[in-house]
Image 1 (cartoon, rainbow, N blue to C red):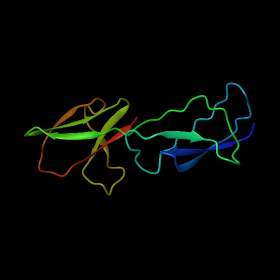
Image 2 (cartoon, rainbow, N blue to C red):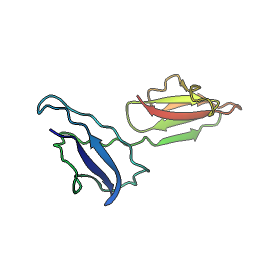
Image 3 (cartoon, rainbow, N blue to C red):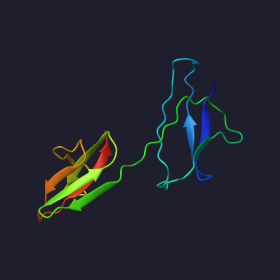
Image 4 (cartoon, rainbow, N blue to C red):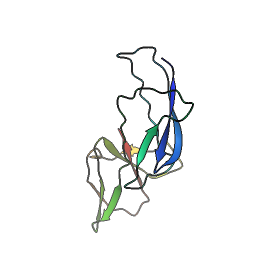
Length: 130
């Protein structure tokens, strides 16, 4: 069994190549590959995984697309409600975007929505997949 390469296409336009390493077995040995498109995929787009000319092919048992959650912040006067759609995400906050290790889990941030008091200090939020 040899390694393979497929093309990821969005609306007929090649976005990137995806390479799969051979496992050396026909049964019970699987390769998981995770990639992100080079840009946001518009709603209603057609997504294809194609074996292009001169690329080695593989049997694909599962092809799964995972979207980025849409996050909304609603002003409720002295509170703010932060919501997102989807499960398996966590809400984090930081007061400094320059410090990459400065993100902290928001209390209750594993379930949407989260309601927080509004303060005068600067705050940044992000939703990450667990």
